[in-house]
Amino acid sequence: MVQTVAWIVSLIFMLLITAVFGFVAFKSKEKRDYEPIKKKWYKARTFYGATLVVVMLIITIYTLRELPYNQPVYGAGNDPTIVDVEAIQFGWKMSETEFKVGEPIEFHVTSTDVTHGFGIYDSELNLIAQTQAMPDYTNKVYITFDKPGTYDVLCLEYCGLAHHLMIGKIVITE
Ligand code: CUA
Image: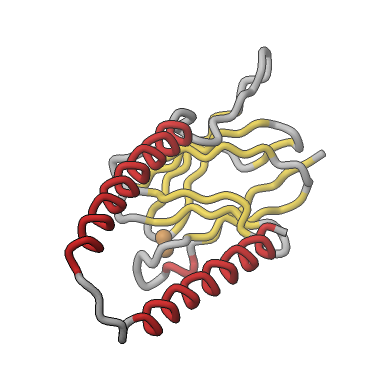
């Protein structure tokens, strides 16, 4: 749905740009006195420039106000399970790997050597959550699994010869 809308909007803009280019190309042979045109369009440029700045400012303030995005709201008596994750060439050290469906989990992800990528995949190998594992930083990923099963933790960043062997498992039960 979103893609269809994006495609239609893109198409409209493409047609619009083509029309403008066509118009300019068509009119480019005409000779006219430059000064009055210049004055008029300098004014328009100032107006549109200022409008753009104002509109962008409003959008920026409006969209940044909820930073950081996707902070979970757990509710009373529903504290998340904190799981410490350490990436190391070439494996994952996790303080816990078995969880329940519906259990809110916060993975606190770091690395002891180089930068890795912490990616959680479901059984069909769809990426369902990810963050970078960086030395001296702790990145958080919030997730609540809604299906039982075995999930793979794969490294998303090339980190050395055995990068492809960095595979961990998470088991979710009912
Ligand atoms: Cu760790 Cu790639």
